[in-house]
Image (cartoon, rainbow, N blue to C red; front, side, top):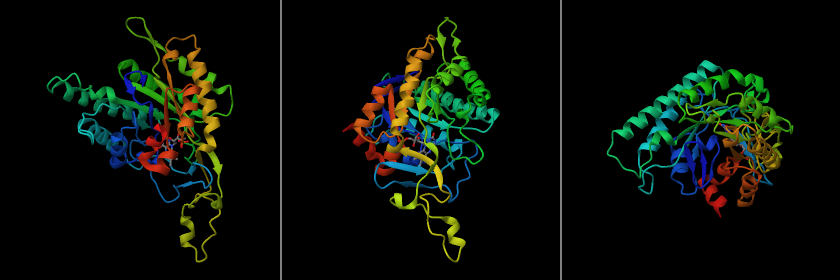
Length: 350
Ligand SMILES: Cc1cc2nc3c(=O)[nH]c(=O)nc-3n(C[C@H](O)[C@H](O)[C@H](O)COP(=O)(O)O)c2cc1C
């Protein structure tokens, strides 16, 4: 069991934000699994992302590794708000009342849009809290507003012309200002950042130093960080896999218009994409270890409370154990979920 600010993740295993957490049926299957301690939604934007056939994925032949070129979810935030409301207010498959947290992954291109998105999630939480407090008291049923957490995706490598913002930490400031303001206004908001894989060992200290500037004091003098968790890591961008390396290359859509279809050279229609699974496990472990160490040994007591969610090549019980040993409080997977479906979490529990 892992506690991250207001939420409790038990078992400390879940999906990370991905294609296979896109719609209500994906989320329902993940939510109802007895092997997930929480569910993360695919990254939403305010209006929905314009997805086309250039956005695709493939699995490598010889290891549990994926490459993908997706941007964000085609479904707008309003859809995820409605789906989360449904999941948190209707009984689970086994008839029990919902008690599992949901981490809503979001991103925005400007700080005002991000503020609007956070405000819409806060409106959902208020509605959930009001409905809960007006129903007959039942100590066994948690306040559903406390089951909603937010993850800001600062690390998608697949947006043309927009490198992952967390690679240049100074670009994050206006976004961090918006998020810190939201947590100062409502300390019950559990909020975290999804980070990219950093190959430089100095980066964890630099990112944590920036985040530490936002520590504030509660009325009783207790220091609090707006950041409840850091999720390490997203996929490794600028990766290239050839068609013969994967189980089934994604269809090259441009080839459809040609009389002589182009030979499929690469696993993805446009070639480059983000790598996930076994191929990035060592780098993800290194990032989890570096961030956990910088946080745990920090002079700022508020930063010592920030938890790390370990993602990247969690494809077996041994890999999950390595993530925990490296300092993760919770582990999450995408590639294994894509390959195995929700059975992935049974595999990790074996
Ligand atoms: C097909 C696919 C889609 C993804 N979409 C998202 C997304 O919408 N938001 C996000 O934060 N990460 C996304 N990711 C990254 C995963 O959450 C995860 O960080 C990465 O794949 C590493 O984990 P893994 O080794 O278990 O795949 C996606 C990954 C894959 C494979």
